[in-house]
Amino acid sequence: MKSAARAQTEAGAGRAAPRARPSNADALVAEIRNQLGDDWPPRIYRERILPLRTRSHAVPAPKKGADIEVQHTLLGIELKVGRRRVSCPDLATARYLAVFARAGVGNVAVPYDITKISRLADELESAWQRMLLLADFLTEGRTPSTRARARSAATKVARAEIEEAGAGAAIPQFNQNTSQRGERRVS
Image (tube, rainbow, N blue to C red; front, side):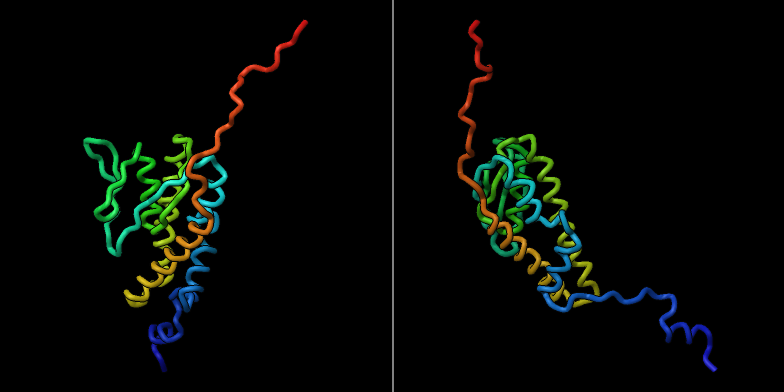
């Protein structure tokens, strides 16, 4: 006769049921996109940034393993991508561009209204980190190389979708109608 502890161990009692893990990179990326929903970074870019009035901005492409930092210098705020530096008008813009530099996107749309950049940078940074954490979570218990491939696959798909959406015009369109008064009535 088996002991009660041994019977529970063999039956798996007290343990959570093993969750089904995606078997390949495509399934993993699809699962990440599905779980993030509205917080999938390319979706934020397409639905919340591109409808705004934007200008196109070039972002230096990082080399493999290059650090991406936002630096405060005597000349202002800079985004450092590897050895290259990009001068930014403010901290929010530098944070915003850093997300796309991490993704490896070359040209992005930057909102012309600077009051919206900070909120969008927050959303993009948190969505990007959630994407990477979810990739790690879904590959928990696997080899480090498999986990790295999962993160890389998610980044590659996100980069492709952002590049496909485009960077918008280099110069934003302005409303040429400058009159602020209505028509005058002649009595």
